Amino acid sequence: MKKTISIIGGGAAAISLAAFLDKEKFAVTIFEKKKALGRKFLVAGKGGFNLTHSEAIESLIGRYTPSAFLEKELLQFTNTDLRAWLNSIGIPTYVGSSKRVFPEEGIKPITVLKAIQSVLIEKGVKIEYNKTWTGWDADNRLLFADGESVEADYQIFALGGGSWKVTGSDGAWLPTFVRKGINTIPFQASNCAYNIVWQSDFILRYAGAPLKNIAISCLNKKKKGEVVITSFGLEGNAIYALSPEIRLELKKEQKATILMDLKPALSQAEVLAKLKKHRSKKITEILKVELRLSAAQIGLLKTYLTKEAFLDIDTLALNIKNFPLDIVDSTDLDQAISTVGGVALAEVDKDFQLNRVANNYCIGEMLDWDAPTGGYLLQACFSMGFGLARHLNAK
Image (cartoon, rainbow, N blue to C red; front, side, top):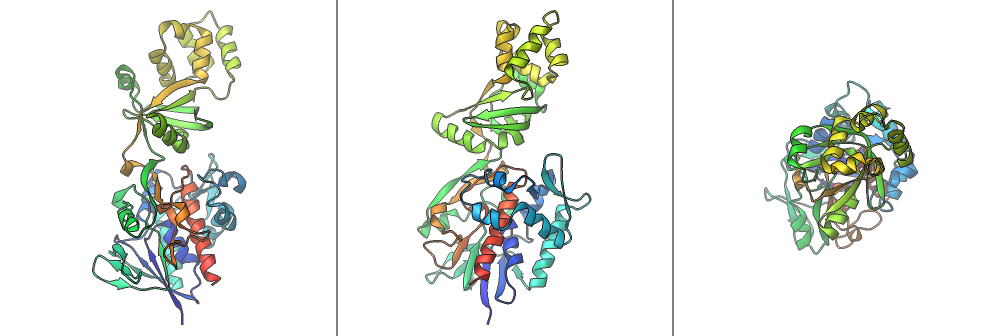
């Protein structure tokens, strides 16, 4: 007789787990609180559907915080493995100029989701919708809001993090785990907009302007990319990747100072040399023509430096390479792309089983790990799903 597996949640981690479980060994049911699977999966695809990143697996592992936590799973099911599997189910991919991996042109997120759902159908996975999990009973059976209780040989939680409530990823399950005696960490925003109190004359002029081909550093980490200036502060890949460092500084100092390199292709000495070479020209003209800084970049320098500092080429060169800005807060939790917090990593073993509840497992964003945007979040969820399926299939 087949053993039973109940999966609570219908996001990327849940559906990948179900796709890789052995249908000859297990009768699998997914319990999803919404009317459809993969709601956050679909929303994530609206801004450019990064399925994974193409960098070498050793480098990819280092993008995660903490990196050691997911190393085994990422090595078992790499970014190359994910692309090969997607191709096998009719979703060919390509590597973009950013080295991110996308479905081939014309393939929408819903098409990817339907391809995975076809695998689930072939595997005989049962899906129950509008099923909100409310906790365990005295015998660790699953309880649902409609009054039903369900017993399974293995119970897998893939309940998501605390952002994008409209998709069902609302973190409402956290108190239930606390009552069970499981150590949890309050959710915090990650990969999100960060609040900078701009000078009014600057933001009136440059709100919505991009800052391209820059680098931003915080503590000991530096990230090249681009950001967008907003009335709230900054958002974009160059600052998303610094989320762990920014959170650390905000907690410690109540602010996080970032340093913006407006011309990462040149050293400070090279910037200074260009400024000195064209002394006969106006400083603004040199910045625009010789250094090719954008109007918003020049606006930053003009607004935040004194007139004396702006006209002093040594000081100006220093600020072009190390322009300081203070972050005072992050955006609301629900507006974040992802979150950290949830079930403490010490509460699960190497195969994601809860130490306090036998045969109960947690995977996906509900665990306390972090990763930047660019395909890393989805890769981790697929790798965890594959890893847990491999573990259960071997039982």
